[in-house]
Length: 315
Ligand code: NDP
Image 1 (spheres, rainbow, N blue to C red):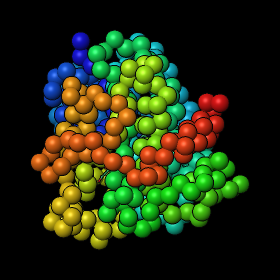
Image 2 (cartoon, protein in one colour):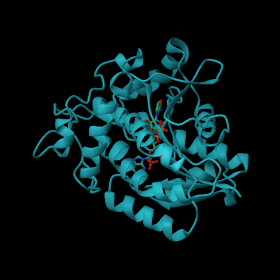
Image 3 (cartoon, rainbow, N blue to C red):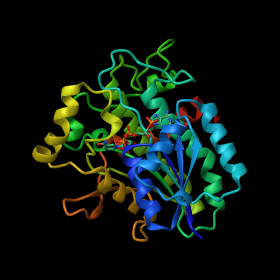
Image 4 (cartoon, rainbow, N blue to C red):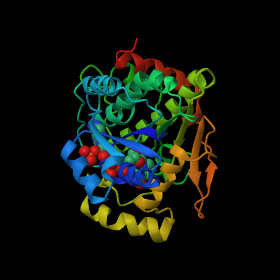
């Protein structure tokens, strides 16, 4: 049978390109988990996804109720779940004030990390029940959370500190909206959320790989300088960033190429190793990359897992 893959944030950028790559390969039913149904439908049409290859389901990661509703709807559909791709993200590099999710969490960490954390935890048993030969949970990471790289060293750097802000609920009223308890910084909040994504992939691997056989993986698909992720940035940045990445850092990758990379992590039979953070070299060959010290700190991963579980109501 065809595999069933859920991709969050498949209405633009990397998620859409991945949906296209998988739909075209013919072996996948793509479930686009999106917050804006009409936008998702238009996006699917704009890249000519074959009608029978995809389905759109509503999911707003900025609301824990919506996440639970999505899980309910998916269960009720009776379809098996073979691969879950946690891809959606928001980024507010120029915001001077934080915004909050329906549950009162700072938006970047709330959507990118906490919403996905609840989604993945709630869907794990479904994936476990699937008879698909290779079941996978993929959480999209980023170089920007990795302070062992050049890009990860551009200030403000990711740093989760002692997690006091996360412990305090990230709500900005009784504490800080930032994980480390410091004052709000939108660019840093995004990077921190990506560190959480990479930590959680490894913690899932430690807790569940042996028992379930599910492959847990993360990746850095390359710098896709043209996606909607940079929509909040100033116009000058948006104009200069793609050529800068193309000609200066040479880290630029097209949405199509990045989509093929993520599609490989979904379906390639040679990429079944669990607990791995994939990257690609100049010739577009995949390799297991090293994570920064913080992004591979097992003790921190355990603490982020426990505090996050409390915040999303799992404990
Ligand atoms: P885009 O902004 O193009 O796509 C982000 C997607 O997330 C959109 O579909 C958006 O939906 C969705 N989304 C945002 N908020 C929510 C929400 N509350 N609920 C559900 N969906 C939501 O960005 P990219 O394609 O660039 O980003 C995809 C992933 O790639 C992210 O995890 C990002 O961190 C990662 N990444 C990107 C890099 C880059 O250079 N662009 C580099 C490294 C990693 P909508 O269409 O409705 O806005």
